[in-house]
Image (cartoon, rainbow, N blue to C red; front, side):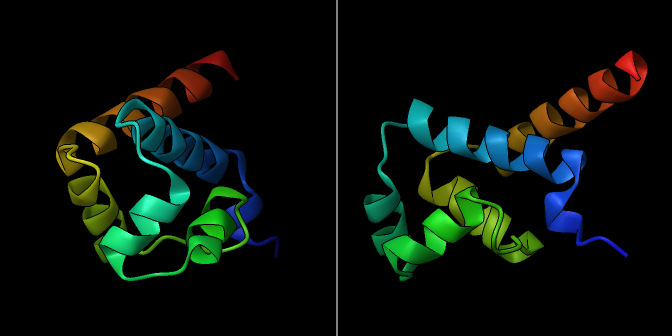
Length: 86
């Protein structure tokens, strides 16, 4: 079975998290510091080499000043668009 971090759905989620970080004007290093993690931890997430758990998703969004529910809604809408296009 293929790892879920290599799926198209997961790519969409990570792309939206990266876009959220960039919209907030926050570097990987700064986000990592806010989370008490290393910059390489954030980079591994953004390169889809590390999974994001729900709690970490929540903390990432809050650290970026983003509403986790709104970010999740953005992900949900993108996934629905992908399914309709397929």
